[in-house]
Image 1 (cartoon, rainbow, N blue to C red):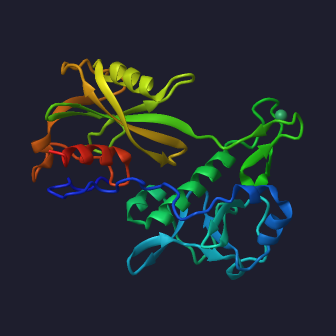
Image 2 (cartoon, helix red, strand yellow):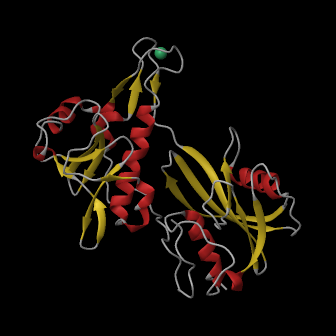
Image 3 (cartoon, rainbow, N blue to C red):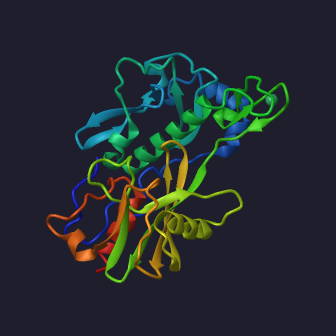
Length: 304
Ligand SMILES: [Zn+2]
């Protein structure tokens, strides 16, 4: 849920590396190609497992708030199936994500990642985001897009292969641009009909084939609000595992202020004064504390 406005804090919430970025995980991609090592880890009681329930992530409540619930394999099973996905090493220990028949072990609570994202330690949010994105990809690529036959999991869960035609399918990440447009002491925020009531955010859209991210920024802003841009600068990026985007965050200066809003895309868009957004009772609610959108807005607000 969106959190209250930043008030007069000095630093933006959740600066880079943003929430859902994998920090503290060593991916060890070379181990994905070692089936004997993987098979031994799938039987090792000390292997750590994230027991998912579909796309719901395992979370335990600790004294300092929620944490990822990493369970030693030996506490609930003797062996992990091939479908368990090898994520990498955390503090030297292998970690797998696994979703059984939509059920986590009884002692584990699972939640929607977005409901706890900004409250988790950064390592845990990144680990759970990675697991969620990979399991989502597996669930939607069980058949070959070229010949229609079933695919099977391989390389520790980082490739699916079609034995009928030989096609190898890799996890997908969709690049998207997200941009805070400014003009002097004003910034432009818009509202999609999908947003919770009162929330206004930065503009965003997917990068199209053979399009540079900067060109996608120009195109999206022109399409959604009819504004030409003067200067575009890259800020930072955020993996966004809902389900599989990579948000590339920009700031841009508008070359005008007159808006021509595309009402199919946006319910509303408007210019907001910095001081009004920083006031005790701002005119709108800002996007969730886990989002790069929130960071892009706060970073600019706090420069004033
Ligand atoms: Zn095929």
